[in-house]
Length: 231
Image (cartoon, rainbow, N blue to C red):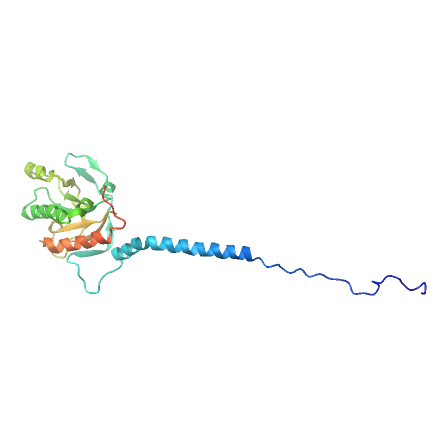
């Protein structure tokens, strides 16, 4: 062997290279799949639980039959209660926000309260009782739009349980919130306010109790999933 020749067997060989391949991770991939599946199942459960609330909300605010079946006038959009200057019959101020939390059947009339006014006050009581077990979700309110005294006999009658709340309010403030049908006075109607304080229905003048009750029943059913008695 010549001295000029190398005895290194690696001489002239190609350099070695290594390629690292990812090893399969079946356990980790399976865990990811299970996590994703669990999230979808949880989302499905939440949506299923929320369906009654979503359905009642859509029914209450958006769904209307093509053939109008309401006996009363539906107010669209509903009108939220403004900052009314309210006082009770003893002159004590009342925050308008305290009216929220219950359905309200509202009569608007001067303190003198003639025959038409008394009939509406009677209808309030009758209509509330006609709703049966749902009556605890409803309160009665008379907005007196002047400063004249209320007759003692009428005042006492309205205190009979369940009492009608009687509050004085300037007439111009009420007319900025509630409105009569064309050709009618503000005192001609029974107004329906929802638990959020929104005026959303007006009964016709001289309403028929049975037909008006059907409207009230529909409203109570539509709001059953979120409305609870207790103001």
